[in-house]
Structures are given as C-alpha cells and as structure tokens.
Amino acid sequence: MNETIQELKDVVIKFAGDSGDGIQLTGTQFTNNTALLGNDISTFPDFPAEIRAPIGTLPGVSGFQLHFSSDAVYTPGDECDVLVAMNAAALKVNLKAIKKGGIIILNTDGFDSKNLRLANYPEGVNPLDDSSLDGYTVHKIDVTKLTREALSEITTLGVKEKDRAKNMFVLGFLYWMYDRSMDNTIQFLQDKFGRKPDVLESNIKALKAGYHYADTTELFTSRYSVPKARVEPGVYRSITGNSAIALGLVMAGQKSKLPVFLGSYPITPASDILHELSKYKNYNVNTFQAEDEI
Image (cartoon, rainbow, N blue to C red; front, side, top):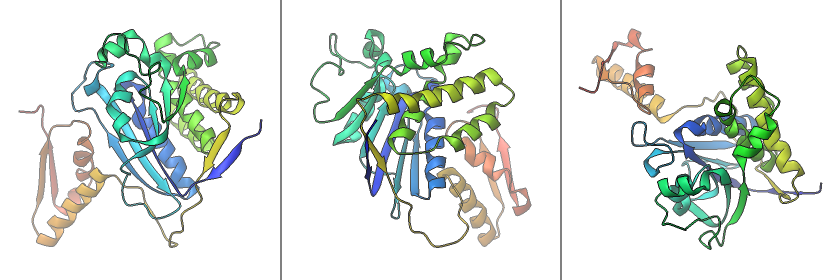
C-alpha cells in the first residue's frame, strides 16, 4: 500500500494502561529502539500512587512518557503528540495532557461497561461514541481481540497468558507508525524468554501482528520519522533519575568524606535507589533493606 513518511523534529508519546498491561516494558522497549536509532531522548515512567490499586480504576493507571528528537532533549515533554490508552481510566487520566489535534490510540476492549464504571464515567457515557474526542485523530483498535486472534494457534497458553502480549501488539503498531525495525525488540524477547518458548513465541507473534496490522489496514496511511540527533562523538549511557540520585549520594559522601547510609523498604519506583547504592560498598556506602514500612 502507498503511504507517506513525514519527517518530524520531535515527538512526545505516552503509553498508559493498567499496571498489568506491561506499560513500563513497552515504553522501555520503544525507548531503547529510539536510542539505537540515534535520537536524543528523555523519559518519565509514571507509576500508580496506590499499591495494587483495583484494575481499571483511575488510581491504578500506569504510564510511560517519552520525548525523542533530532535536537537536544532536556525534558520528557509537557504535552503529548500521541497517547496510547489501553482502557477508559488511562484515557480519562491522560486526556488533559495531549495536544489538540494529537493522535489517540485506544484499545476498544478497555471501554466496555465495566471499565467505564470503574473509570467513573457517568452512566451511558462512552468517549468512544460521544464528541469528547473531537479535534483529535483517534484510532480505535480492539487490541485484545486482535492479539488473541494472532495467538490462536498457540494452544499451550490460556487466554490470560495470551492477553499479556497485547502490549507487544501496540508496540509493533507504533514501530510501523514511526518507521522502525522490530529486530532489537525481538532480540530482547529472545534473551528474556529464551527458556519459555511458548511465551517467547506469543510475544514475537503479537509484535509482528501489530506491525502488519498497521501496514495492511487502509485506515493508516501516514507514517513518521525523526532524524538522528547531532551529538558530539563519545561514550554515552542510559541513566534513570533513581540511578542519578544514587550516584549523587555516593559523590556527596566522597566529597564530604562522610559515610553514606540508606535504610529503605523496597517499593516501586524507589527500589532502584536502594539497589543502586548497594553496589557501592567500596565507597563507604551502607544499605539496609527493612522488613516493612515500620
């Protein structure tokens, strides 16, 4: 099919859904893919505020925002060009953050009566059917159904296990939209699930299904690309805010010639600070993992 590939300077995408939708993994994979292409990038993982908030509710929404560009990037972005919402709650929480005229990709399975009720939409109101999304480019895709169909020949996995791969379907769709190769994600999946052949197969099949769905469906005719950023030659690393905090604490201890101590109870997303600091015992850093919050 014929489609145009429009060149953009920068893009802000947000993936959003339930904690069990694999949002953080999806965002991380798109981020790694983007970095390998040579774009400058900044990300903002957005975890639910509550521990194990009920599925489908507003407090249970997990998000991952990334800003990539052919120019220098200093923030994860204020407004999104693209929002991927896996359910009604994810749309409701994040709609205010997307630019007018932006692209919204919706998993229609996440907008049934139960999900609408859990997201506190009024009785009889469904954003898929009313005018609340006017002014946006909306792609309504039954990601859950299409993922199950793509994995129908895998008989060793149940429906719940197959549904866990729907994030890969979305990722494949986005790879097509932004003219990306799936190769590095396939390699990641092989490394991660090499000892679980059925899980590996389901994820790779779902990834390719999302890509080919976008490629063969006539509704999607526009694709985008962001050129490489011009950066000084050198060695670069990917670093999170938590890792940066840990390194800053180590450096503060070294400069002040004081020992560093962290007593902490592991909880997302702060656990990484404890994990990172525990690697620096040789720099007079001591960590203590407490049994509970008390």
